Structures are given as C-alpha cells and as structure tokens.
Image (cartoon, rainbow, N blue to C red):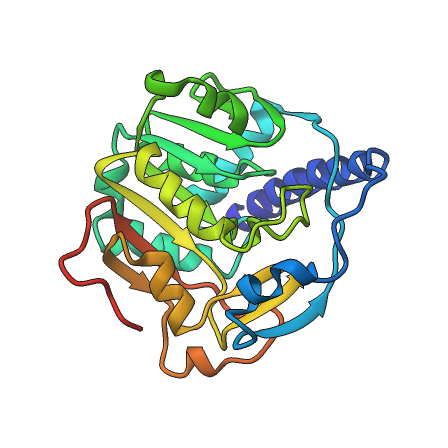
Length: 282
C-alpha cells in the first residue's frame, strides 16, 4: 500500500544519509571553528550587546568531498513529495511549502522553472521542485554533488561566482534553514557577523528580477546560538527581508517572537526579487 511505499522510500533516503555522515566523520579537518564569539567581533555579532547569546557548539567543518545520489533514491524522494510527505531534512517546514504549492499558486510558479537550491546536503528540495513541475534544478554548494537525474546539476559556490558576467540566473531560489548559519564558522566558512545579510544580497543577482525566493529561517526571541545558528527576532528578520517583497508568509503565528528555545520553528517566506515600496516591519 501507499503507507508501505512511503516507509520504504524514507528508509532508502535515511540509509544513504547515514552512510554519508559516517564518511564525513572520517574527513573531519584539524582546525576547528572558534568555540566562542571572537572578541574583536563581539559588538557586530551581538548588536553591541543587545542580542542574547546562547552556547551550543558544533564542528561540521570538513574538507571538500563529493556525494553521488543514485536515480532510485531521487525517485524515492519525488514519490514522497507527490504524496505530500515531509522529507528527512526539515519535516516541520515542509507542510508550509506544500501549503504554498497547493493553495497559494506555488505549483504554477514552479512549472517549467529553473530552480536554484542554496546549500543542500540531501537533494530533497531538488526532488520536490522537479515533482512540482520545475524544468531543472541547480544546487550551489561548498561540495561536489552528482545526481542520477540529468535535470539536477550542482556547482561549487566558488565556481558560480567565478563565472562573472556569464553567471546564470534562476526563476526560483530555495533556501531552507541555510542562511542563518552563514558566517558562524560551523561549516568551515569564514566568520562574518553579517554573513546572512550578504547571502540575501547575493540572492538578488542569483534570482531573476521579479523571480521568487522560498526562504525558511528560525524565528523567535532574537538570539545568537553560537556557533549553530541565528534566531531571528523582529529586528533582524526585518533587516534580512528588507529588500524583498513578501508575497506570502506561512507559519508566522502570534507570539512567535516571544518563543525562547534553542531550536524554534521555521516559518516559510515566499519573497519576490523586487524592492518593496515599504519594507515589512515585524
């Protein structure tokens, strides 16, 4: 039955993911990310001491590696998406994405679109995009990924920016629980207090004018959970989205900005690459 198929598909994907993580543990690099916010960057990271800092340290820095995803695994993920099942990446985020696709016109936007996925160890959102009609996906990652489906391609971040004026632009971007990590060093990236803002600025040139960005980040009482992620309160969330027109927001409930937890919920924002007349104030 359908339930058995779903279970089998999920098991297949999880097994591949576990094997990948086992391989990564053997590749861990000698230099670790800083355990504390560097003193010289404290003011920038904490808005001069106004941002709550919580301690949760992870070292997920690895040398560049490559991963191959066989066609059977990709088809298993597409099957899960077709039956509106959550993926293994961020299962609490996926219902919001399905709501956008099914009831707010998102599936029309994805038809024949070129879709870029920012930072993706598991090609769940690539498979979901193809299932909902995308013509092709491009994953921009720090590591090489090969897919058993010719519609899926990947490029190193350095390769993309090296293309200079010949860089391709995409109709739709997806960044699901990615930008809140930028600049914290957890993944071996340079420590940069404004890494998330810079990532959003880069998206303006990666996505076509008038194109869409489907974005999910942790939202709650504003905090820096060093070095795992940022939690976006009203102020930083407003700054993150200020140059984008917000078309839809899903999962943004009353009281969310008072939520005090290390792992808050992640609403989904559907943004258009046009400058808003008046930026949204949260």
